[in-house]
Image 1 (cartoon, rainbow, N blue to C red):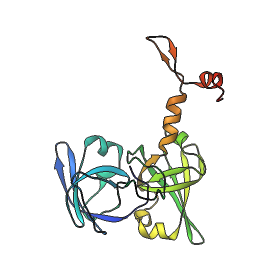
Image 2 (image 1 turned 90 degrees about the vertical axis):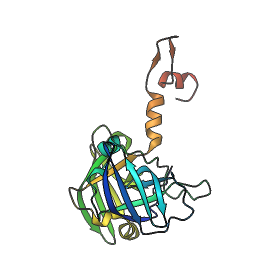
Image 3 (image 1 turned 45 degrees about the horizontal axis):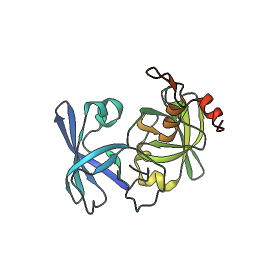
Image 4 (image 1 turned 180 degrees about the vertical axis):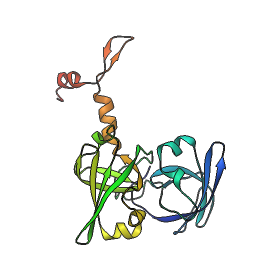
Length: 217
């Protein structure tokens, strides 16, 4: 579990093919203190298992599924990524609840400045945009951001100077690809409210009618 608050950036030191996937060696710009072999580290928003951890360096394996669902397969030596170690129970939840399970790849359409702020407009697949709401939370390459506006297949976010300086967003150009994770709560609510039927005992599961009967709708 993560918060979307980036701890620092990292660089790809090397990569290689492993069992149909890829293994990456990263060097973080911060020290990985009290490391635990096998701990989770979010790389551009994708939760990965880290091993061979040594001060600033660590290795991860990226499965074929993760390569299909994320932008990680396009990384090369020298490329920069956003890094966040897994949340501790004692940590502040400064962003929002982020699972590190990327929902889709989005594209930057436009980038413009408004005073000290940068407005980024992204496109996402139509099956994903229903989970993105105005003033809701969205994760872009691992960064917890607030949605300014959204429409069919689009959403925009406003980036403060600190975030531009501390993450990879400053390197992003129109047409660039990013990993998108929508707010996990919306997906669970949709699942629970979907009208379904248990064919074994003919019992209706949670739906609008059930909620109305119980006084919740």
